[in-house]
Amino acid sequence: MSVSQQSAGGVPVLVLKEGSSRSKGREALHTNIEAARIVAETVKSSLGPKGMDKMLVDSFGDVTITSDGRTILDEMDIQHPAAKMMLEVAKTQDNEAGDGTTTAVIISGELLNKAQELVERSVHPTIIIDGYKKASDKALEILEKIAIPIDPTSADYPKKVAMTSMASKLVAEHRDYLADLVVKAILAVAEKDGDKYKADVDDVKVEKKPGESTAETKLIQGIVLDKEIAHSGMPKRIEKAKIALLDCPLEIEKTEFDAKINIESPEQMDAFLKQEEDMMREMVDKISKSGANVVLCEKGIDDMVQHFLARKGIIAVRRNKKSDMEKLAKATGGKIVTNLDSMTSEDLGYAALVEERKIGDDKMTFIEGCKHPKAVTILIRGGTQRIVDEAERSVHDALCVVRDVVEEPKIVAGGGAPELEVSRMLKKYAETLPGREQLAVKAFAEALEAVPITLTENAGLDPIDIISDLRARHEKGETWAGIEVNNGKAQDMTRAGVYEPLSVKKQIVKSGTEASTMILKIDDVIAAGKMKAPPTPPGGPGGPGGYPGMGEY
Ligand SMILES: Nc1ncnc2c1ncn2[C@@H]1O[C@H](COP(=O)(O)OP(=O)(O)OP(=O)(O)O)[C@@H](O)[C@H]1O
Ligand SMILES: [Mg+2]
Image (tube, rainbow, N blue to C red; front, side, top):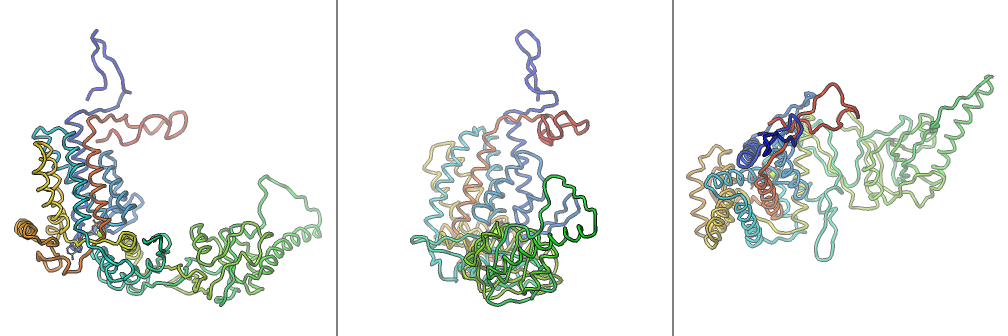
């Protein structure tokens, strides 16, 4: 751990700043593997339907209860650089496939675990990396071969896939009902693209409101805004709505420079106020002239403008999110207008109904029967804020897996069956390879078994008997033999109806291999010294001086 080296003349040569730390070779590899393994160990207990949830408390005291791999790691505020790479695995998995984050982290950890054993047996990390890459390519090939093709337009298998993804979450009890909503939502937004389908999860708007129960979650054919109608004098319901979408404020804008107006008489004051009022009245006239009876605005609306709009019987909702405005434009077929002067009736969107409804303690605005029938919203309900938060994450996972199978209509069964099958075939493949590479491919195959082993352990069962039974069944050609944790039996998982998208499993192999090989390639960790808090260095906080926490492990 030295930052200086003795030169030939005996004078130390300082290369790094004082306070920097450095670890090299085996030591660096060992610490990195250890850190990454600790992370994998943390999420292990939350895998599968019998997995446990984690309660995470942030520095503000806010509590999150979840079993979602990515959320757990996100909230853990990890410091160690190698451990942070595990968070990256979870993020990549989440962005690419939407589900399987816990599995990806567990497999990365296990690949490193096995690599550590090989390094101790004097296998060089480069050989392990090459072996892991070969194994990963082969594993993807095997997965592709054993996958079951399905019809993406029938709701049957997509629903099963959605149910599997929700089986391991807090909302499991309502998964049958929720899976129906999720499948309907994705099939509504899916578009044909050549002979394939494309679906964007972002096209399904998800809103949440605590209250009632998760069973009251609804799919709305349209857009729901978590906003109330701006003024109490406005109508609460308008049919055949002609909607103006504005991203300009309906207020008198303040000048950017300081202006002073000298008013010397009450008449002048009146005239000044009158002029402001006239300007606002003019705004409302322009809106009403375009034929709009609903205004959805991204910015603020002045009280007086609200009053004038109300007098004309126009509904207005202010301060909508930009992302919502974009969805509204797509859904209603309207154009977002920046300048009221150029607004015409052509720019208006259409919806059969705009209505404010009371949901829980709050009011929300529903825009239904839109011009574009593909606009849908899932409105999540649940006992408390934490339940709706976790339900939102689970619905997100479910939307992603249904999207996955709609875009790539191939599935595999779950419960550790595909991992065991790939593991078995990889072991066979390993036999065909020379010496040390063979060891690495075998290690990869064994690492995959961590999935059925962990599922079994989390269900409170003894993995030794079950895994050897499962291995034997796979040997006999039972491709989908896995552990059904609800009844604790080793069985054909297709019979249990537990299915997952092929793309989730493929992404797990890819992200797990990438992260573990990246960590194995590091043989030198040089960390800058910890930044001293006060006094602030010239150039302000965050100036030169290394990264906080880097030297802490
Ligand atoms: N009834 C079941 N019996 C056995 N295993 C099941 C069953 N239902 C689901 N599984 C398995 O549970 C695993 C998924 O668990 P979980 O959803 O907790 O983790 P993940 O999908 O890897 O990560 P995350 O959902 O946190 O992103 C999959 O391997 C799946 O096959
Ligand atoms: Mg999952």
